[in-house]
Length: 260
Image 1 (tube, rainbow, N blue to C red):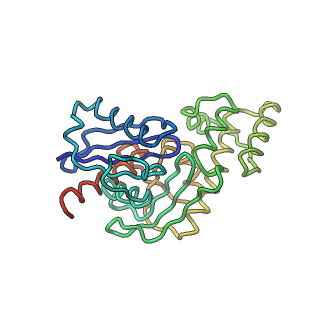
Image 2 (cartoon, rainbow, N blue to C red):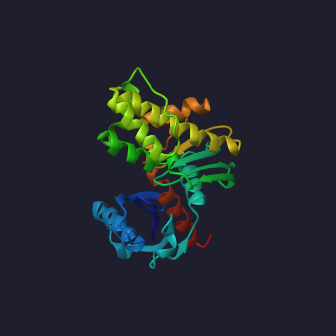
Image 3 (cartoon, rainbow, N blue to C red):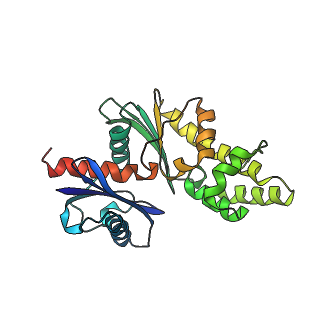
């Protein structure tokens, strides 16, 4: 029996389909205003690209902000539990996870079984999230996908003193008007975000090998800034780090389907 995990976040919906512990379908898509519609969209995209049939999927688990609004799933699970499960599947040596998504950041310590032993969230302020970078990309008129390379290629950097997104945006506009190099501004933005997330991670006493997940983990500039802020080298999964919640949900679905 095939099983599926669906993660409907604030900006993207993710789907992963497993067959006997092997990923056979996966997809990431932008959300719509309706979580159920977003879930269907991600699932249909995954199925379309893999060639499997929806009727073959026998068990669904959902996670993410919209998990309780998806009528066709059999079970729901917390985001932090799903991310921990997904990372443990790919990086069993990890003893902590840092996840930066569209509108929140999470840090968790996990044991040798991948179970969460302590965690912390930041979902009150956008400055430590992917939305912060999206707003700044719009302000700078630079593609968000280019942020990492631009930051790493710059030999300069500026300090972004404002943590509030609105004030930071004003500060960025001022820097642009002064002719400051775009790469230096982006590096400053990465450092500001990394500093906030590092404080979150330190609050739970992360130790050992740390995995970096979420859509922002694909930004090489943020990864570098966070490594410097924490004084460690972050692990990244072999699969898309944005899929870890959906992967964990699929693994939980596999357990439930087999009666574990």
